[in-house]
Image 1: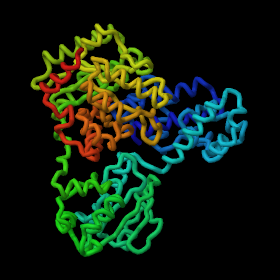
Image 2 (image 1 turned 180 degrees about the horizontal axis):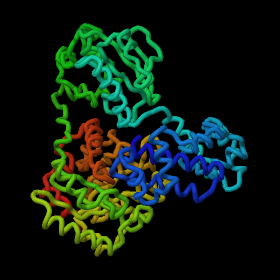
Image 3 (image 1 turned 90 degrees about the vertical axis):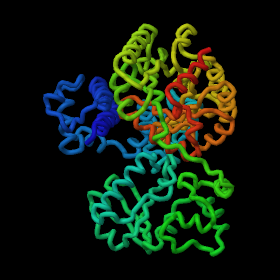
Image 4 (image 1 turned 45 degrees about the vertical axis):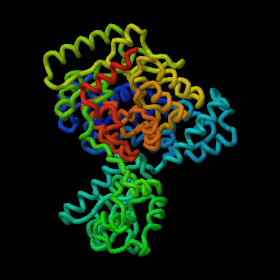
Length: 556
């Protein structure tokens, strides 16, 4: 098991114990274990018991449970509580805004035992009968429960890509070099995937023989489709075709229906058949190759026909890491470790943007600690690096009135400021839009961070008037963050064309809270490609000098 899986097991144990009103000190110790273990650098699986005992907060009992997880993959303590808890109640723990006390009330007092019953109870106005609930709380819970239901059984792109990759590697280990690839939504790089589809020239019979309970099992097979279930209980569709048809099948299984219908109108011969290579499909239609991630609408075909396809950005185009946290606030690694990692990855600059002082939940930096960090950055730049630069930034909380979280004499000393909303998220569109625009108009704001605050499949984010916010960024020379964390990917790709049209810079930022988090840049770049972004429109594709010059224009 990975550290993350072990940490999540302790979080799950704490959750289910709280539903049974168990000892608060035990619950707290398991939550602390979750917080500690998820941040560890070295794998717990490779540690001796003595090394585990050196971890702060890991005593004998926590250590025993870690060893139990490593040996069995389960916690007996969790299984005991889960056996006395309806599965639907445990599932409702994932609904935002329905805390343990409220969940316990709707379970025990209203006999609500799953998400469907919760939605029904809200529609029947039954929650407002409970102590501590009101019409507003009930409405918020209903909205969160409906969103959870809509998001259920969907996957973040990172997880869909990883699971598809596991099956592809397994099949190719059995038949080296065989044609098998992800197609559909995964190939189109959708941030959230409804279904995973694979395409292969392997016959259904050959795939059936490969089935292995440790990797995947066959659910159904009919004609050229096989439905499989992975060891992680994820469903996939495997499409079979001949080698002669591989190009045609790849094309037809990749594009959105709107795109395919529009493309079909260009074909004089009717149905697309007998292409071994996908590029030949485009050649036959007299078009240049359209990248899979762009095949969502009919307009891209017109753009291709006019010879105006964008030269899409690549990871190699990114010159600097913007938006990174260290252990000065809520990051895992030190300033030095983050800088060395970024330099080793070939980047030319790193902006340190720890949380500002209002972010007490993230150990935000008060002025004295800011000055300490600035001195450390100066020392790094003087002695450690050649051809690499560390910049002094902050992720400043946008306060409720839209102001930034420091006085002007501090704000003007930063090299750059990423301004983000982290508190008071329950806003109307009018309030959220006005709050963001005021922050954008602040002369010290360099980049607007994760504009909607969304967490994919978990939190919708606050509603904003995207056009007004983007217009304000363009007018004030403020870049817009495309937060590259695969659970955010915010700004949404659908708004990139409008931002580019208005002349607003896009900054692809990993929001890294560890060295490994810097590698999230890849997911931001993939999302930017889906929005048609070119390197010339991306802020951190600038050289260190040009990036620094941009930041200096935003210092008041």
